[in-house]
Image 1 (cartoon, rainbow, N blue to C red):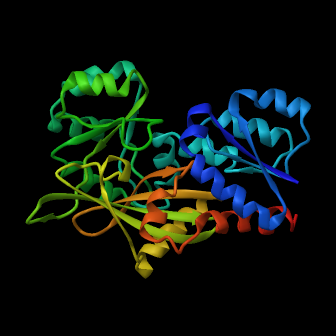
Image 2 (cartoon, rainbow, N blue to C red):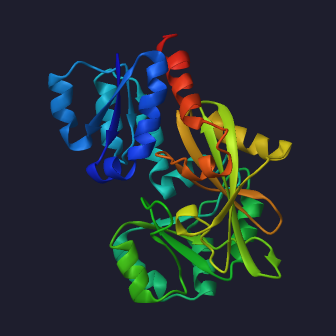
Image 3 (tube, rainbow, N blue to C red):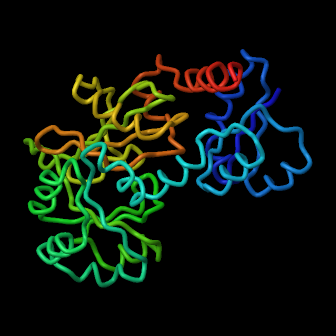
Length: 309
């Protein structure tokens, strides 16, 4: 039997060690890992022996859909890929389940106009256009009302590279977003300390319906706390209340493996920010090398979804 891992060319080269982990662990199940370039998938579906399942490690919901239509078990599903690889869709999908960052989606051609507006004007824009959730309207209103700055993000950006403050150089923001549709959000900061303003978020790794591990990312002086941008990381223990928040997300959608990202505000609340469908695990292995999420993920896929079906 074989398992397909589907990458674009750049991702395949960048993730060689991660791919090797899957190859080594699949030997336990006598399964061969076969790398498939996304661009060759239509031909492979016509000409190849079908795999026992496919892991899509490139961001293209159409690929997930193509595999599902061919009858191949896909991780993650088309629904996960379609919703979670668009920041606006993600927050809209879950905002009645958990407190989420208020967000408005705009086309790329509207970015220049948004960047000319002051925070008070953007607060007014939210008051006119944002549709509040049924469950968290009061909290959303406060997050918007108290905002002293706003953030713009490409809807399909990853790793914090297309995330900017409204106050940054306009040419830099326009170049960074690059004409993509984008979301506008109030900036939410954590507390302050002797080292200055602190930004924190928590990445929660989930496998199926199980919370596998949590990592806190922190940054001082930059509202982006991404590990890839230099944020500090440490393993994080969720409280019982925080576990309930994560479970509310898991009730709304079934994942294979994903990274659910919450901003931590000054009141230590978890506020849903985004969900990584093609989640990397580098910072988890750095914080807790004894936690083997690749092994856990394969166990879930093969024992729970394939061998029992």
